[in-house]
Amino acid sequence: MANTRGRGGGSKAGGGSKTGGGSKRSSGKRASGITLTVGEREIDVSSPDSVMFPDDGITKRQLVEYYLHVSEVMVPHVRGRALTIERFPKGIGGKGFLQKQAADHYPPWIPRVRVPGKQGRDVDYPVANDPAALVYLANQRCVTFHITSAPARTPETPDQVIFDFDPQDGSQASFEKVRQCAGIVGEELDRLGLRTFLKTSGSRGLHVIAPIEPELDVDDVRAFARAIGERLATKHPRLMTVEMLKKDRGDRVFVDYLRNGYAQTVVAPYTVRARPGAPVSTPLTWDELTDSDLNAQKYKIGDVLARLGKMRDPWHELAKHARSLPRARAKLGS
Image 1 (cartoon, rainbow, N blue to C red):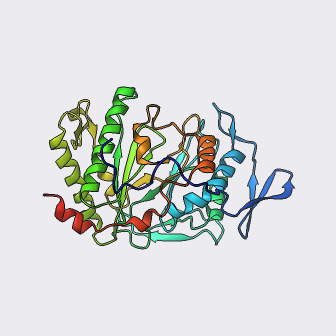
Image 2 (cartoon, rainbow, N blue to C red):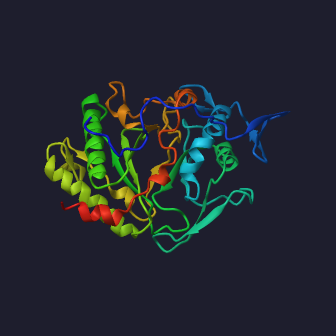
């Protein structure tokens, strides 16, 4: 990888990080579940031994406790953002659904935020501003959390630029192209004065995110991301493309800038994906982009907990690295 100056996340070696969010398990047990004390809240976890990931035997209790342990590092990345949730009432082997509207039975301490819908219908999204909210939602069999590029209070003014790269197929050769594209886009954003952060999607590809000052509306941010894609697709015509139709892409990687549209979402850092093995969308250092064993599902829930026991979150204090997008846009043609 070329010069990584300006990249977020530092190096692989890092200080240790507590991951419990100041929370603990209550000593009390109920006949049908357990009770977790999370901050000032007590959360009853029902049916803790029910299996959520049938191929792996991962239970609801393990899922909830995973979110408890990562809450300290995850909550800063989702705080104040509308959550779109993938719920699986019978585990990922059964039928799941995507939920935006906060359920009526959610307790009043779970924040809601009303966001105008694209079709004119307002949606009251749940928000996880603290570890207890995250744990409560996991107990509702919420497996995967999606967030927008803009805070819920200002849904038309993003504070992140997002690029999503997925391979054309499941081959290692296709993922190598994804790896190249992520590096090239990261370097271009660096050149423009932005600070960039990298993570696995936990599913098929990689995400590159740059925190920005909330100065431009969502259409301007999306246009900037598209311009980046077009510029780099011109420079690397055999590697990447911005063609919307899959049939026109060939074996090139689509520079997906569409995540920057109004109310569009991306999976949150540290969220679990509804796939066998319980892979996690894991923040990486830029040094890790060149690891020979890197793939989109490299880190599972147990791996992430062990990882956070040895190193600091590579995305810690991400928001403090926000840069001016108008300044970056002015440099784009240079």
